[in-house]
Image 1 (cartoon, rainbow over the protein chains, first blue to last red):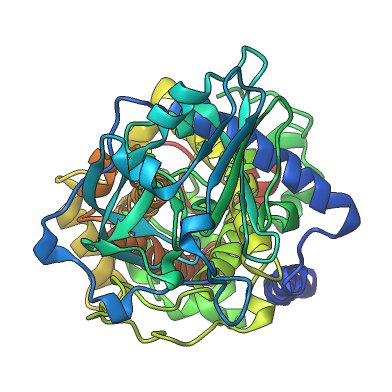
Image 2 (cartoon, rainbow over the protein chains, first blue to last red):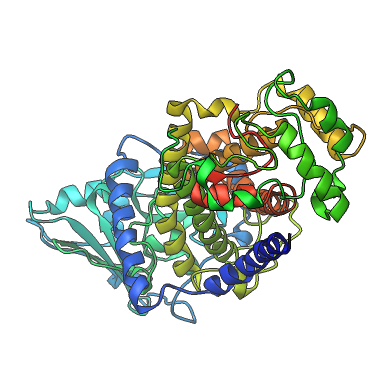
Length: 240
Length: 298
């Protein structure tokens, strides 16, 4: 009888201890020096799954009517530099296309705007969890890639900006997706500095932090280029 | 389900002396006609005895237990030790319990980055936690990227153990003792009346009573919905068909969030009832062996 009472009390103790123990185990822990790298390794597996299994060139992100657009003042825009980086002389600006390519390019904004354009109204997914809808206009990245003719060794694409060294690495499959564009217009108007003027990458198949603003260069590489936030721990693929 | 295992067979188990003292009212075991003591059980069906057994209640309970204990082979005053849970059920149960704590804590870390549900500019869906970050002790990851990495790393084992469990239930046929079906509705009502003391006799049951079946079926469904809504907000463009099923990205995120509180509510009730009504079932979920007052099989 006494034994049983004790054992039941022990059960209660076990239950009472389990709660705080699991909470202590939480406490904002990022995995530490041992588990942290393992989490990063799993993230690489998820990048692979995201690119090979989930991503398809045929699957397009849904489009929305213009009436569904988020009010421009409600569409957040982030940059690393403050105040916003601005190109002093837009006429002197050009996009360098280089790296593992047969035909390096130096494209002015006028040259990019002369290419066949794509306009779509799509949902923007931020890694933080918010969404906003806007209309974007630009040249399909695939047409610029076709001009540069990447070599067989090219596996990734690195986008550089004039925003305090912000950069992103992309897989070529996402870069070749028909909805991936070099955007120069937002909601039917020329891109504002807040959204990356004069030129940014845009795609509704990637999270916002992958969509490099204030572009200066595109470099084809064999090695995975990392990225500004990605090197600090964010998932590298960032595909939605 | 084999009865062979590292544990000793029922008759020779050293803890047999402790049998029949789990301080609970006797119940009619299995089929109503099978129990010799169904009438006796009615007289002893006092729910409060399970919570705070007095000496008198226990002593009368001991007599009852011998009369109605499942398994006629049991000697008077002793309940048989029976194998209740397959190792796969036990492993996946505890694995998913731990994984769920990690999934919830890292999920709350992710929530803290944008504590609203709805598009920018609103309106936002009703949420008592709207705009309020969860405290650090309730989160895992330290910052958004850490939370994401934990969440996406734990998601795969969570899905795999869940799938292994469901597969086992289907292949073994054990789903029959757990799945809530339409015929369980009147049984659940009877069980609820018993718990409310509006019915004296414990309704006959198999491995689980009808309310348990409802709860376990619900929690499995919630697990499936959590995983599916998780994929819907993980790949809203590539799996847009799935996201549409949940009413869009913002609603999928909303349901994914509410699942947390349903899991927590279930866990609270589940753990309380295990400790109060059937403590022997905790041992069964750890070792597989059960010496309690309920039938172990349908």
